[in-house]
Amino acid sequence: MRSKAWPDRRPKSAQDYGVYRQGDRIVVDLTRRGKRHRKAFMFSTHGGERQALRAARAWRDELIAALPPQPRRDAAQRPRRDSKGIPGIFCRRDASGKPLLWTAHTLVAGKLLQKSFSVGRYGRQARQMAMAERVRQLELMRDTVFLGALKGDAAALVQRHQGEPSPIALDIPADLPDPSDVPTEMSNKRIKTGFAGVGCLLDREGRPRAWVARTRAGGVEQRKLFSIRKYGDDQALQLAITERKRQLRRSRQLGTGR
Image (cartoon, rainbow, N blue to C red; front, top):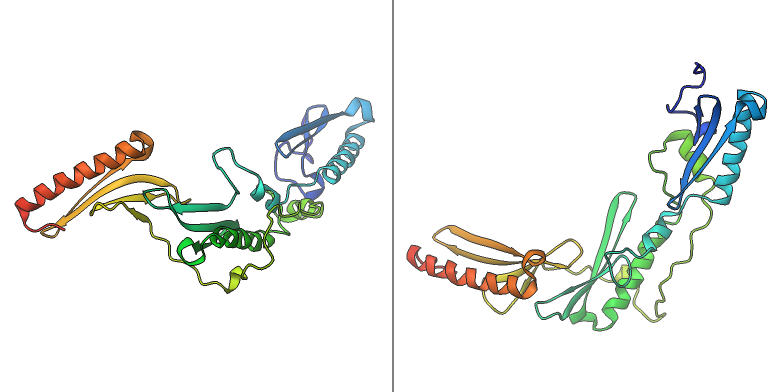
């Protein structure tokens, strides 16, 4: 029979974080760094429900101390399966693949911090300056850990066991300008191709997403996108150029196109 003082799987105080009653036992169930840790404490083995609960809380506390929650800064530095290079640093290129901007961005306390550095202005240093900016952004994450849906006392309990984040694994030259003193660059969302009316749209991470043909005539805009994922880069570009020519022919029938 379920104890009235111990409801199953309902919000509990901090002292019962990760601890649940299941029938004739108390269970500790926590996940740390992708691995699940679970242990049951039987009433019959520990001399009753109260004693099993006491043992479960003690084991839970040892587990938290040994495996503290992962700092957000550590998670932000972890390479992702779908990315290349340095996490949080992206290069925006023109249609020929030539670098235009190096950008550092980091999500800190729900706010996206982002700053770009022009290759045309800073040359090879643009990438290093983006790295220095990324370091500055990561430092702002020093005192935060993953708490999931935890709030109040339970969040405070976990926060106390956070430990120190790992060092930031970016090597920055000492003679670089301070990125905070550098004005932000305005990034262009379209990459020009040399063929008027055809451009490349980028996603939020600066990667080519689609080629677009656009023509405006007589107050009417013609616009059509060709997905790079669907057609591939070369075919999407050629389709956009062909569409632009079609739009121009149609524009001549309506008036002057541009």
